[in-house]
Length: 116
Image (cartoon, rainbow, N blue to C red):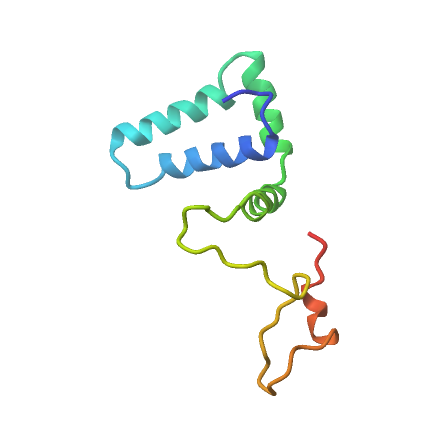
C-alpha cells in the first residue's frame, strides 16, 4: 500500500486486512494479513507513522459512505448482459404503484431526499 493513496481506500484495505487476520482462514493467510498491517502501520519508519496518523484521522463512517458512493456511482451496465434495458422514464423517480393504485406523491418521497 502506498501513503499517497486515497485515505478512505487505505483505511478500508487496512480494515479488510484486520478482518482477514482475525478470521477462520488458514494460519499462513492470517499471518500474511497481520504482517501487512504491522508493516503499514507500526513499522519504525516515517512512512508507517504517516500511515498510522492517516488511518486514525479517517472516520469509519466517511469510509463507508465513500465506498457506497463508489459502488453506486461507478456501476455501469454491462454491454454483454443479454438485452439492454431502456433507461427509466420519469427522471429518476420511483414509478412503482402504491397500494391505492396510484403513483406516490411528492410528500411521500421526502425521506429519500438525501443529497448524498
